Amino acid sequence: MWRLLSVTDTRAPHSPPVFDIDGSWRLNPQVALRGEAFGALAYHYGTRRLIFLKSRPLVDLVSSLDRYASAAEAIAALIPVPERADYGRALARLAASEVIDAH
Amino acid sequence: MPTENGRPTLKERFTRGLDAPICLTWELTYACNLACVHCLSSSGRRDPRELTPAEARQIVDDLAAMKVFYVNIGGGEPMMRPDFFDLVGYAVDSKVGVKFSTNGTRLTAERARRLAAMDYLDVQVSLDGALASTNDAVRGEGSFAAARTAMDNLAAAGFGPFKISVVVTKENATQLDAFSAIAESYGAQLRLTRFRPSGRGVDSWEALHPTADQQRMLYHWLLEHPDVLTGDSFFHLSALGQPLDGLNLCGAGRVVCLIDPVGDVYACPFVIDQEFLAGNVRNAGGFAEVWQHSDLFTSLRQPQSAGACASCGSYDACQGGCMAAKFFTGLPLDGPDPECVFGHGEAALASREVRPRSEVGHSKVDPSGIRIPVPTPVRFRSPAHASR
Image 1 (cartoon, each protein chain N blue to C red):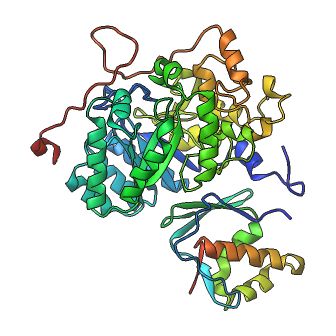
Image 2: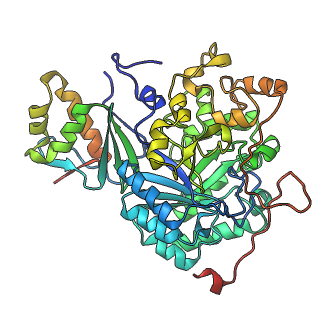
Image 3: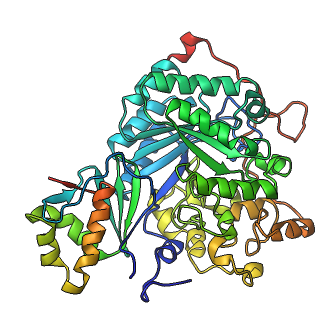
């Protein structure tokens, strides 16, 4: 399986948030995205982490999370069935690196 | 290069260049009150052509428009620029985060409090020895005490986890644990970077660069200390086995570059030489034009020849090493790094003919005419003068 994202800094955050796929999530307001041919660069101004989102659908998913009642609903609406588990895992990693947060 | 399911890997994408740099180094001034023997930019004298405050703000506007998330500010000593606080304030307000390097001599308690009050700003204080004697031999008498005072001021101001930045040399390579202890005592982060033979390093590299044994020790130490930052600078060591953390590629002109104090854009901070000059931000189109269309950067984004390294099984891991290290030691760019972990660089060094010497330099003139750099002692300004 090709990886959907790379996180440059592997240090664990102070309190890794638990990812609840049935909860409501959004792109962390402290994170800026810059579209690239491979997906997007994401930069967290708080943790100073640079994250590479390595697929366009992942960028669309992350950017539109706040329009859905839950992450699971967003995945169901935007991602084809065979890839949903991968995208769920990618969101969990993005939650752990605080790129997305519960709201 | 390997691909993932037929798509280009991230590394491939990066070697072909992006529309905007991931980050870049911006040296605000060539003025410096120290004269470190390994200064990558041969700093000392302010250049009269230095960018004006208005021109510097224009660069911030250009970077913000290109969505460059942060800039590494250096020099010279950036705090010697009279508009230093205005400029970094303007940058962070424009959402261009600032990571700046300082020798600490101007980092008074009052200025530490000003820095601590700013968002999106990181500070790294340079320290090249865990002992004053080791540090001062490279950075000048009194510079260790000055750097420690700056760290004390940052800690007292509640700045949070600042960085302590060390250039690894033959003399301090045995002090890595001691550097860690100093960083820990402040709750600071340790950052180690590679000593390149750039700037005044051209003259000090032979005597000061770490030995082959020290490089191997450093590689294992870095693997054991993943929390130590390296700015991706030791990727030549990844040929030893497990890759070090980071992108492990030369980003020069592809994902990084340098803007120097007069607006010249070079491929990276370690190649201030006509050969690697891509353009100037004062010309039409500004920085974006240079980044996106300069002949130099276009050619760096073409596939590069592995040359003499093509038959080495570790080429994918180290990519032949650092362009700047090869250039300034007089080695061909498509051959081994002078510090190649398999010793291929040493053989190449023995057979080289000439070493280039950059025409760009701002070292203070040494009246004795001695070319070997000697650090000057720190001269403190009176507190009244310094509290501007």
